[in-house]
Structures are given as structure tokens and as C-alpha cells.
Length: 299
Image (cartoon, rainbow, N blue to C red; front, side):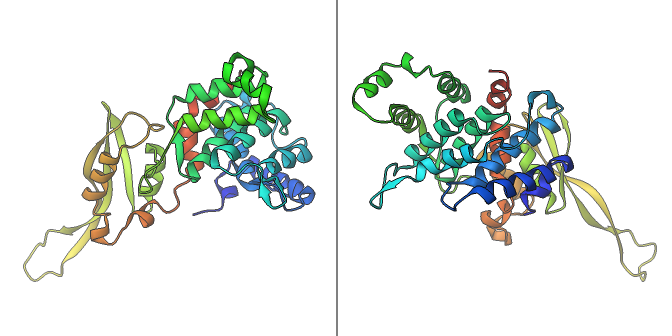
């Protein structure tokens, strides 16, 4: 898998290097998930630049590294060797709340917090069981200090320290479910990248279908029986696949079908770990939650 920096548009690459250096210089080594959150931020910026929506980005990188490190240290707080926040949902809640309220980036703070949180949940085995809009709305309410609309939050205010984090943690626990460990999230855009490793292309999208083709060696018909066999390569369609759009998730049935047709299965020496190697889960999540990320730019 190519280094993350090489996947960014060229104009972002020096900005990413400088931002990583700036934050690293101020970190004491205790900050939580620095690299992953920086990757989330620059993935969001890269996505909007590629989509021709640069106007949705008012600035790039951290403007307050200390505030970023403060937000990222919160999930790691401990007293006497005992973690204050010990569960996946509690840590995700502190991450979401800290990034929103500390506002450490020039722009895209809500989008960075949103993507960082769903990515943290995903790599720890959880995914949202509600619509992307629900977490989007919660993200905006946090930014606007509007959690008082929830009765549960007002009750927590009366009896708990850090009621915001405890409420967000409860919300995430109630509205996520565990992923099957054998399940890979992949969109058609990322599937195209995976298949390129095997010299397979996705082409001719039309009528909710797309062709899966690859270069194959084909025998050239002999002009006489004693002629040495010759070959040439040509692009041949292997199968078709239902195609709702590049940013949509590929269902398990369709994935199984295309791998079977291409003979990219364990029986042919390609297990799932090998097949999905190099899959960028951050980009997949951007594809799956692009609607919420677009709207958060203007909320």
C-alpha cells in the first residue's frame, strides 16, 4: 500500500508533511491517535479538492497544535493507572467532543471530528446502525452546545461529571453495532483500485451495470499446422456487476460473484486478506458518508 502522503493531491503533500512535523514537535508522546486524526483531516480536504469543491475548505491543517493535542489526549486520561474512559464508545465520544469543541483546525473541524469518530469505531469493530444524518445532527448540536434538548443529557448534568462525553458515549453505544470480523467495507471506487492490482478494469457503466474486464492472452490462429504458436493480448469482459454508483457500498454477494468469476478466491490462492490488502478504509468511509460530510461544510 502506498504511503498516505502519496495518495494526496500534489498541492497538499507539503502541507501534510509540515502539519505532521508541527504537531510532532509539540507532542510529548501521550497524545491519542495523532496520525489517524491528521489523516482524517487531510483526507477530507483532499476529497473536497478533488471534487472541485475547494470553496468548502476555508483553511488547511491545525491552527492550534496544542488544542489538537489536548483533544487527542482526553481519551487517554488515567488516574492512578486506571483509565477514566475505558470503552471504545467512551473513547470515541471524547474524540468527537474534544475535536469539535477545541476547534484546532483552520477549517473542517466538524468534518474531521465526524470522520475520525466513525473511523475509530470502525477499526475497533463497530459501525453506525443509524443514518449518517443522525450523527451529523448530533455533531452540529455538540458544536452549538445544544445537547440540552435531550432529557437524558439534562439528567446527566445533575449527577455526572463530563455529562457531554457520557451522553455522547451512550448515544454511540445505542446507535452502533458490531461488525462481522470477516466483513470488509468497500465501495465501487475502492473496488476499482483493488482490481487494478490484478490487471482487471471496471468499464462501461450503463443502466445500473458495469463490466468487469481484463487483459487475457489469446492464441493467434495458425496459418499452417507447423507454425509456432503465437499469442496476443486483448481486453475481454469477464462478467457484469450491478452498479448503483462509485460511492456506494459493494454488497457481499456481489463481491463474492466478482471474485469467483475472476478466480480471485482462496481456492485459487487469493485469500481475503490478500485481496483486500491496500484497501484504504478512511477513503471508504468518506465515500459511504459523503452526504453528511458535504452538508457539515455548511452547517
